[in-house]
Structures are given as C-alpha cells and as structure tokens.
Amino acid sequence: MNELKIAVAGASGRMGRMLVEAIAAAPDTVLAGALDVAGSPSVGTDAGAFSGQLAGVAIQSELSKGLADAHYLIDFTRPEGTLKHLEYCAANGIKVVIGTTGFDDAGKAAIRAAAEKTAIVFAPNMSVGVNVTLKLLEMAAKSLSEGYDIEIVEAHHRHKVDAPSGTALKMGEVIADALGRDLKECAVYGREGVTGERDPSTIGFATIRGGDIVGDHTVLFAGIGERIEISHKSSSRVTYAHGALRAARFLADKATGLYDMQDVLALPR
Ligand SMILES: NC(=O)C1=CN([C@@H]2O[C@H](COP(=O)(O)OP(=O)(O)OC[C@H]3O[C@@H](n4cnc5c(N)ncnc54)[C@H](OP(=O)(O)O)[C@@H]3O)[C@@H](O)[C@H]2O)C=CC1
Ligand SMILES: O=C(O)C1=N[C@H](C(=O)O)C[C@H](O)C1
Image (cartoon, rainbow, N blue to C red; front, side):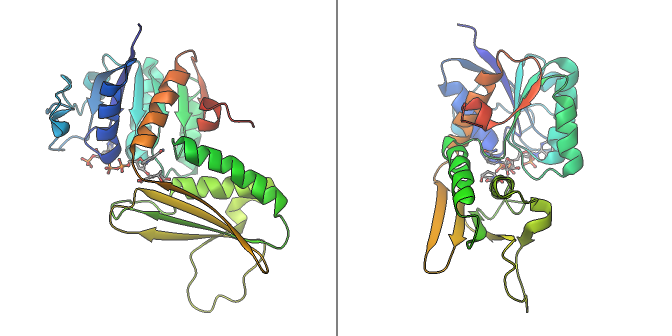
C-alpha cells in the first residue's frame, strides 16, 4: 500500500498530539515530519514522546528539515505560522490541510493564492458532525427566514485564543448566505449596556471560555412562542484529527485547488 507521508505542524499542541497519534493508528498514513516553533522545548524531541510511543521522528523548527520527506502537511497552529508553512508547501508541491482558525481577510486571500500552486483543504472544523450541522443550519435558516431571531453561542476551553470560534463564524456565514445577508454587515459580537431593542436583521454571537470544554456550538432560532436550537458538542479532539486525515486522503488525487470539508465529505452544495 502507498502510505500517505504526512507532516504535522504544531506537533506538541493539543491538536498536533492528537494528529501524531491518529497518523500512527491509521493503516494508510505515516508520520513523515513534525514541526514546532523555534525555542519550543519540544524541538529536538521525538514527536510521539508525549504518549510514550516513540514515532521515530524528531520535531524540527526548520521547515526544510521538518518537511523534507512529507507529501502532506496538516497544520493546526496559528494564522502567522500556517501562512509561513503554506508558502513553503506551495513552493515545494506539498499538499496542505489547514485547521487553524482566526485568519483575517488578507490571510484568507493568501490561502486562495497558494491553492493555485498546491492542493489545500481549509476548514474551521473537521468533524463530520459540525459539517452536517452546517447543512441543517442552511435548511433551517431558509425555512425560518421571517420572525426568528438568530443567535450563535459557542463555548471552548480556557486556552483558546480566538473568538468567536472559526466554526461559529462559519455557521454565521452559512446562515447569512442562506438569508441573502452579508455577515460582515449583520453580525453583532456581544452586547453590553443599553443596547436598544434587537434589530431583527442581525445575527448575534456569544462566546464562553472555560476549563476543558472541547467545543460546543448552539444556534438559536428564537421566535414568538417557540424556539429551535441546533447544537453540536465535541467530547474529544479525535473527531477533528480523523477529519483531517480524511481531508489528506481526499487531496491524494488533487494537484491544486482550494477545498473544504463539504467537498471532502461529498455533502450536497
Ligand atoms: N479545524 C478544526 O477542526 C480545529 C481547529 N482548531 C484550531 O487549531 C489551532 C490550534 O489549536 P490547538 O491545537 O488547540 O492549539 P495549541 O496552542 O495547543 O497548539 C498550537 C501549536 O502551534 C504552535 N504554534 C504557535 N504559534 C506558532 C507559529 N507562529 N508558528 C508555528 N507554530 C506555532 C504551538 O507551539 P507552542 O506551544 O510552542 O507555542 C503549538 O504547538 C487553533 O487555531 C484552533 O482554533 C482546533 C481544533 C479543531
Ligand atoms: O480551538 C479549538 O479548540 C477549536 N477551534 C475550532 C474553531 O475555532 O472553531 C474548532 C473547534 O471548535 C475547536
């Protein structure tokens, strides 16, 4: 069997560790490299050391070393790191799965440009459940377009650095598209003080951070006399890691192009 040679960026992070384990456990993938930031205590150590199962791959900070044997990079780091890795991968024909969230418009444009040179899956949430939930939200938004106030509530662990989550923003985009609205114009990120009555054309976001919450998202469609809540709750990061491996497999026969998990999972457009 031709195994997929995958490198992991942010190898000592929460998702990086999960990916190292998932790659070792899958029959068709092999860890071909591991990256972390220069100065991180993990650099030079074995990528599997945290689990007691040595991977035989040392974590590198230099891209040319960490990516020398890789055909794919799975990157769950920070926008500035991902963009640096992406530039190298695009120049060297390495396919990339991007799970990192928190990109600004310029970062997203750089990802689109890199997709002209290599194949990329970019998605703020790699779980099957969240991507099916996006479809449910599209359907609900179309059916509840009048008389229902839409609010998105997300909760994550205390270490998360971006807000709202990439998933919550994606949910907002899907709903706004379904309603013919522009999320940039209708989003309300938190409320405080005398806000006045709710503008019915808005989509509200609320963020909770605490403890070890893996990732919860609820969308409320609140009407008069009833409300609908569509929720997804992650209980383990393994769901994201398995999704990222599916994304790498999906890229096997792609040379260039930008894809998302709806493409990977072949969900109807
Ligand atoms: N798409 C999806 O399904 C999911 C997406 N995510 C996203 O993935 C990202 C990472 O999450 P998580 O694993 O929890 O975060 P962690 O902070 O646990 O891990 C991030 C890793 O990236 C490294 N890193 C930090 N800055 C840089 C940089 N500038 N260049 C290269 N590497 C860097 C960190 O190194 P060090 O610790 O030394 O700073 C660490 O190893 C977040 O954006 C999160 O939102 C998370 C889960 C699922
Ligand atoms: O940082 C996390 O943990 C997560 N980040 C992603 C996001 O911002 O949506 C995906 C998931 O919710 C976990």
